[in-house]
Image (cartoon, rainbow, N blue to C red; front, top):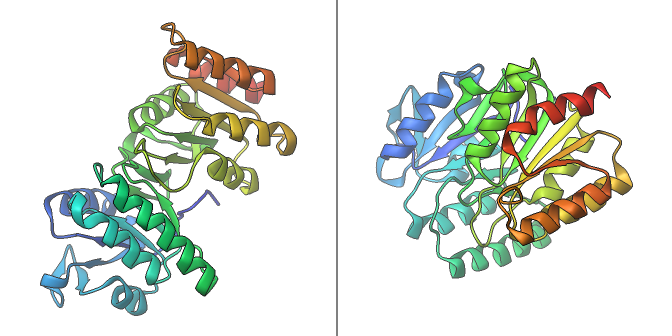
Length: 284
């Protein structure tokens, strides 16, 4: 079925009338089932109007109640983005995709605490991709965010990356080798965010349409290590890992690559090898 979004998803755009909201929503509408999946926009100042044939509501709660939407993509200025994320969580949406970069760290710390409190009080857990996430795409079905959909082809390899450009490079390589993707998920690289490598790896583990996973990381943090340690214990699907900086002598990146290799993942510090490693992992 793919992870997080699919052709049956119902999606709204917060900030749909701004420049970024208009541009990327129109692109998403034009891809695969996008016209059916995107159902509304939110802008309190323009409630009651419409754009691209989509109704505009004053709040996320109103939009969700009227359309059944469970996913939101946020395109608002950084000072307002934390509030937009919280509004979506308070409305009970299942997933929020936030491509916005530069949200103050203190704002995101508050968001994280509030989202936990909302979940504890309501039992509803809102997942967050971002901030700074390029989004998520299930090729041939729907895209939410700024992913260049034409690069991605339907298939059975999952991609998770902190970087949009790395995800697109991997998708292009896989496509050239006849390997498409079940889904590609961009985490973003902001200091405080939502979903991490382990969360997405677990989602791919549960997805019957994903046969292997490509994990694209960096020298910073230990998210890739935690994911690989979990993968070694729980998954049988092949894992291919790339760590940026390892080939250029970054000691932290090289050390992380060694840990992932020790877990049994197929690893590389050379981005040009990602596609070939994935094909080898799948074909044995």
